[in-house]
Structure formats: structure tokens, C-alpha cells
Image 1 (cartoon, rainbow, N blue to C red):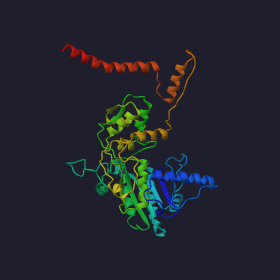
Image 2: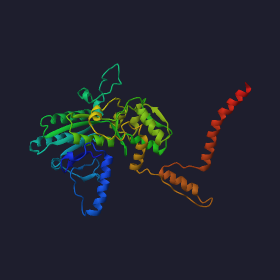
Image 3: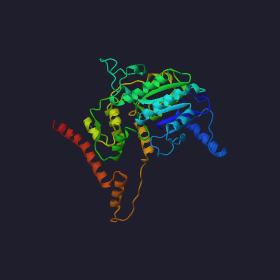
Image 4: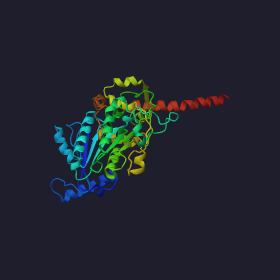
Length: 402
């Protein structure tokens, strides 16, 4: 996702279908591309009623995403403010880079100061995290399974490592209350994001895919409930906010699942890796160089949340409303496609004794895939069949003796 992105509409947003699914938009774009390739010459022109996406990248060396009209590589805040003032909708993502928190707060404050000059309302959407609820006490101590909803946001207590995030949330909400007609603000508390290349869960996908360990680690007892949301569904939430402009300015963006960390890791292991997990002490997670402190905090969160407002007021065609476990096949396919993990098919031919096996072993090491040997497969299959048949033979022998 773009770390600090803004979206502009070339005309009134009501010309775009409210809550239109991304799939429908993609089909329309394909048709438009075919028509444009025949009729138009030169750079594409913006269409009325279609959002034009511009923004900045978390890693500036990355190439411009296909969906983005332009990527800004600014060196100063004055220059960035000029670009922001050109936009109707500004979205700041503070879930991935803590440095974005200060910039997001500055941007909202600077835009608010200029709001009296706005000809029409601008929207500022802060994409935050459910970790600002990390230490919230259960609504009912006797029934900890009652989920939090948007209505409880004033009672939220942040994880100690996310104090800056909640301060940014409060600032953004406050700025949106003084001149609503000119400058509207929203805060979206996102669940742990998954889909495509994966983010936090990449650690478990990678371990499972490489097949270098017979057991995939699950840190802690794995019973903690991790609120999640697919990135495509999160994008749909943001689009709905832009279209609907609801009165509620604090929203939860989570799917309907109440899956535990253990269930998620076991599901990934079963569908990508060895199929088994091993519960190990939480402290062991800190030994991994691939898991940042933010990732560890998200792994160990334990919250039950329900996005009531989204379900009752937004028109979202969910991609994974039931969560990652229920939609694992689709999520795995996305991961393989985005990461380029497509099957490598190699046929090695030659007479006996020329080194076919040695070459195959080296290729498997290089591409990190399993070296499947026909004799071993046959032997293993026979062993499995013998294990299945043996108990039956023992049972029959006992019956005859009786």
C-alpha cells in the first residue's frame, strides 16, 4: 500500500457507483484500455467520475504501482503541501512506518490551517491500527467474548508501543470537528492486514514454503484472538468512506473472523508447509530478525472486535469477510502470484551415469524446492499402505482366536 497517499476525483464523486466493487472497476478498466488502444494516441486522459490516485512510496526506490497516476518523491514539506492541496482526498497510512505519524499529523494540521480557502470539502483519512485498543479492558469481565465496536472507541486504551498512534488519532478527530464543511477527517482502525505479498504473516508463509523445518513455530499458547482484514477489503472500506462521507468519524476495519494466532499459523502450515506447528515460548520470537517489534506486538494482541458500522452502512463486496482461515486457498494463490512463486518445471534427460541426479539435486538447492526421487516415493507409499493394512490384520487375528 502507498504509505501516504492522496486521491483526487476529476469531477464529483457521486458519478462513481457508491461502494463499487474493485472487481467491477477492474472489468471497466479493461474495456476502457481496449477502447483507448484503438482510438487514443498519447498519454491517457482522466475520465470524469474516476478517482486519480497519486501519492508517495514507503520505499522510494520502488517502481510506480500500475494503479497510481503519479508518485511524488518530495524532499521538503513545503513541496509536499503543494501536492496535498491539489487533492480532494488525502489518505495517510501510519500502520507500517512510525515516521509517517509525525508527517500525517503535520499534514492534517497544515491542511486545516488552509481550509478557509477551500472551494469544496477535502477529506483526510488516517489509516491507523487496532493496536490503539491493545490494552482495552473487556466490556464485561464476566463475558470476555463480547466484541468491541466503533461506539466503544472513547474507552480504548493503546498498547504501550502505540501511544504515538493514538495521539495522532485524537489530533485528526479534533481537527475535523472545527470546520466540517471544509475539512472532514476520519480515522480507520485497521485489523492486522493480510493478502498479496503479505506483511506480518509473510514470516509464516515463507517458513512454510521453504520447507526447511518440519514444524512451523507458533509463539505462545496461540489462544489470543487476532483481528484481521484483507487488504482488498480495507481498500473497499476507504473507497466507501470517500463515497459515503459518513457522520461517524472513527471506524473499525476488521473482518468477521475471531481466529486465534494458533488457528492462523496452523492453517498456513497445512496449506503451504508441513501441516504441523510447534508452540514455543513467546520470548523465542524476539530472536527472529524478520519480526519487528511492531509485528510482535500485533502477533500477541488479543482483541475481539466487530465492525458494525461497515456492515450496516457500507456497500462492500467482501473478498474475505470470513477471515484468512476460511479463505486460505485464495490467499495462498495471491501470495504465490505476487511473490512470483510459480512452479519451476525442469526436465533432465540423458543416459545412465551422466549426472542427472546430481544436477537435479543442485537445481533443487538453488530454487529451494523438494527433490522427489521415484524410488523413495514408491517405498514411502508402500510403508503407508502397510501401516493401514496392519491394524486390520491384527483385528482379524484376534477375532479368529476368539
